[in-house]
Image (spheres, helix red, strand yellow):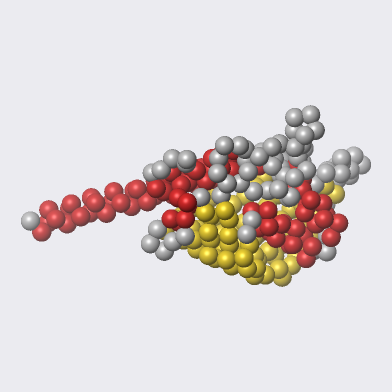
Length: 245
C-alpha cells in the first residue's frame, strides 16, 4: 500500500512539474513571437521561469536584434530580468510589478548612413511612420492595460556607439564602460521604462545628442498595438485559462 502511494505521489509530482515547465515554455515562446512581431525584429529569450508561490518571474538571456537596414547583431542584450509581481492583477488588466531588476549586458547603438538610429527603426517607435507617412493608430476595441513598477533597478556596464557612412561602412564602435546602477520608483508607463532603460543609460555614456533622438523615438511606446495587447492576453490566458475580453 505504501509503495503504491509513493508511485502515485511520484506521478502526480511529475505531472505538476510538467505543467509548470509547459507554462514556462508557452510563455517564453509567446514573448519571443509577440516581441518580435511588436518590434519588427528578432527577439530571443534563453530562459523563462514563473513562480506562482513567490509571485515572481525571471527572464534570462533576452536579446533584441538590430532592425533591417543595420548590421547584424543585437541592439540590446540583457543577462537577466528579475520581477516581483501581482499576477492576479493581470485578470483586471493591470500590470503591477512591485520590483524589477534589469541586468543589462550591453546596449549597442548604431547610426546608419542615412543618419537614423537603430532604436528609431524599431516597429512601434514614435518616429516610425506607416500608411503614406502617417503614424500607426493605436489598436481600437480593446481596453487599455494600466502599468506600474513600484521599484525599478537598472544595472548597465557597457554602451557602444557606431556611426556609419558610405565611406565608413565598417566603422569601429566607440566603447563606453559604465558604472550605471540606478534605482527608480513609481514607473507608471512602458514609455517611461523604455526611456530609462535606453535613453538614461545613453546619457550616462555622454551621448546626449543620441539620447535626445532616442527619447523622441520612444514617445508613445506602450500597450497600444494589437501585438502588445495580444502578447499580454496570451500570457494571461496561459496563466489563468481565460481569454482576453
